[in-house]
Amino acid sequence: MNHKQVKNILLKNSEVKSEYDALEPIYEIQKEIIRLRIEKGLSQKDLADLLGTKQSAISRLENGSYNPSILFLSKLAEVLDKKCHIVFK
Image (tube, rainbow, N blue to C red; front, side):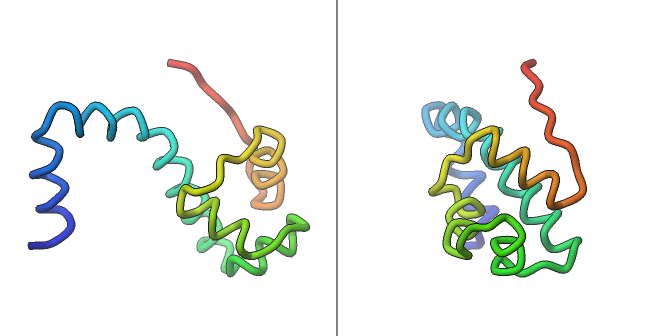
């Protein structure tokens, strides 16, 4: 059984689905940061150096074990030649 199949089975449970949906914004931020970093041809260490932090901080950011401040996200966006916009829907 692959990851997608397991995910589909788990998301049939309404409690699991609710928790998963609540985490969706965080997952989206993680995916976007990874995509932009790779698009720029940067390693985690390269990005960390540009931000004045450690590679481990970028790893924690990308795997979801670090909750960045808005200031950090703004600095990250700038380094990646992007702008940070926060939208409430």
